[in-house]
Length: 348
Image 1 (cartoon, rainbow, N blue to C red):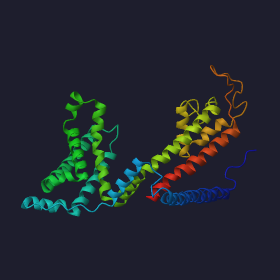
Image 2: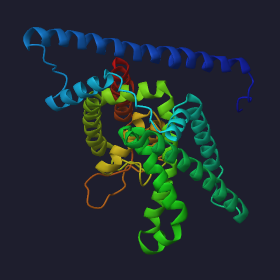
Image 3: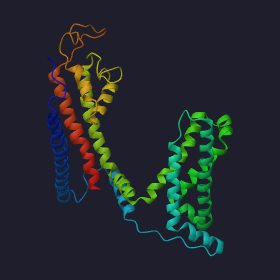
């Protein structure tokens, strides 16, 4: 007889407790140990470099050190000299208006509202809805153009000395072009596909929220500081994936296509093997790829199947090799190498 469904509900607690201690606790300890050892080893190597290499950084190449030092100087850059208030009375009034915090907050609110209008667009919306969204978008373009004009009047040539202002100016120009010259440009100058990309420039307004969020700016700057080390870790991950891709092609190329193995996710070619391994690096879908490899005989697979152009027979897998392959790769890639990214970013 089949077991009764939910006969013992309290056994659910077994899985809940296992997830808490196995996933939330033990795996995070694993990450903590990796980060701690990473930092300890780096301190030791820095000490060796100071003693034996004259203080040279042996973690990065010369070009990477130049990039790192440039970003470090950028982060410690002194505040720029404030833009002088214009002598003209009208320009001075506009200058006082656009430099107030309330003005920046109002613009941020408008950007958020513009995000909402972009989110409500659908591919099957009615003509009335399309017209309403068109006019709403037109209002936003007028408002953002007005902001740009006011800042140009008050800041004069200093307007183009600020990177965010240049970004705003480009987005406004592209938005105006996309709104008013749509049909003519699409018909005579650029392809429809390229024009759709130009129209997406209005999404760039969302990036202006970064300007007002100090925490996001800090995280982005830490990411930029970490790029050389992240690139090196990426090369290490690629090397691991390359080795495992070749190993997978040698052992699982002719495994029967079922469950997670299909025409795209398989080990028949190097490219498909890399796709599989990239998926496994996120710890997703590895069980579907492993299931067909666990089939070792009939009726699950045919051990005598011929493959034209190859001397290999059968479409069965090798359970012991498959388990070793997936477990070792997940430990090396997902639990070790990927967590080194976290260690590098935390360091910066």
